[in-house]
Image (cartoon, rainbow, N blue to C red; front, top):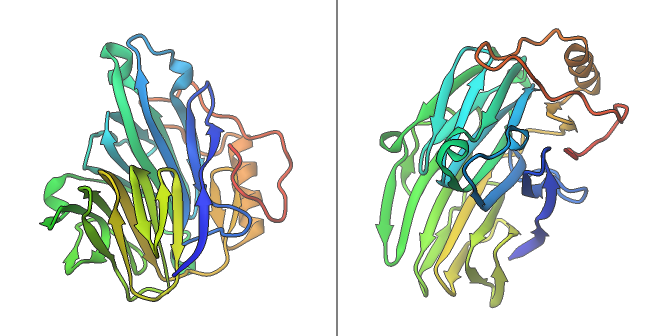
Length: 298
């Protein structure tokens, strides 16, 4: 059973680079520990791309970012010294914890053009791990189990599902998978977690007798569910156990509003280290004051 349908909203990340924002919304801030979900592209980037479309160095606390591409290439640099390209069917997993900064740049696009398509999700850390030391890991296909069954080609990105476990580090019970579905193919949505959802990245599917097209997240009840592809479709399935109430301000996530205020003050005062390999420009703190409850707006 579908509890809610969330449609993406277009958001400019700066310089004209737009994404489809799905989570959070006022009526549904999280699905399990997933607190943020952006659909990037599909977008054709011409050679000579202006650097203003890059995502300049910016900070995070209290979360892990999960970057996964269907097409294209993004260069990640962070304040721990990591410099890592992410390509299709790979994962960049960055745990912000007590604080990290990073940039994401479209360097291949600038040199030769590119077709970019992917998802960036944020996973809120459990309360006891919100201030864990920051870390970064890159995962290639060998860490991400694949399977094929009756027109469904799947890849597990994080957690455990479909009898498989991904090699990515997770901090709470969750699952996150990419399903490439042929027309007419049927896929089971993993059960065993309190909160679950699917996101239609391309194509169209049928669930509970209703057609749903790209750009929609379907938040599901705990009952067993099956999704059928009405055309060739790319579907993300995700969920997990809730981690408790979280507050969001800009790029910061925390169970404490005071901690958000401290992170904002630290960034404004220049107390968070920039990436060594990308420290000549950064994204400034938004002008708006820190509210008691906030959803990310930029």
